[in-house]
Image (tube, rainbow, N blue to C red):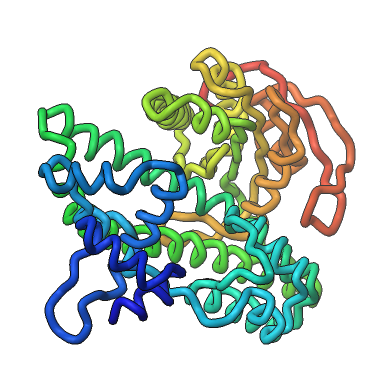
Length: 405
């Protein structure tokens, strides 16, 4: 692109572009298109530095002296800079039939700076807002539903980005500096590294997300099949010796690791993994997966699930972890790719949600199958979130925590 096109797409003036060329921050290439999309990042970076009161002339002097370089920008920033459009956020919102307060709420939920109506949007802003309008129309959502659909996304993805950048700074940039590499050379080195690592991370991120989405979709589909059979009057199969699913919830574990710093967070994560694996193995159980603040287990014997839950409730705080709460249910499960699905899984999770810290709650089915594993105190018939009928729950109390024989 030309200097005038670069200025328009990056939201600056042709005079500023020429000044940045003169300072060595931008490099004019030969040919009719001396600039490209990567230079948008350089212009915005320079504008931000200038606005912060850092003299660009000082940076230019460092570049001239060979003590600093802007070449890292092409590597560490994702893809090419997204150009500004020749419209405003207000006009973009109007074209997509999005009320302005809805636009503001969506950006707030995404954890991004809320735009002004007169501000020029970036190309990716247009794609995001047009995509939300399409989802609204396809799903028949009202404004409240559209905003709700953005709540779960922003903070989780922001935490992922924060963790990834923190890891890169400590384990890549920090390691290069610790080896004695001058800062300029370190910056020039990390650019190509970032390009390759970002591509690998993007593929891994998409793969993990798709696997989680597939598993959750499969769970929903299994629950719907079971619900249809129940409503049609078909009896649910009850295996003679059903397995048990248990969930252990460590409320506040995710927040604790975020506040503790990277090194302590790694140690806490290792402690959690070691504790749940060792304890589950001691009661012939299987750790199925870690779930943020919790863990999902599978046991062939419900008695082992109860005993393991009581052990974990006692051990969690002794190992520096938040208080644990446990929910256990026994029944038929569907297995796929090493995971377990169905109403049994869903009910166990809901029981764990209802339990209080340091409490092991179980269903009546578990009590009938694991009568000798613990003493049981009736809680009552409880309405659980996402479960149609009340569920009779019991509190398990330590009697004998040895594995069932």
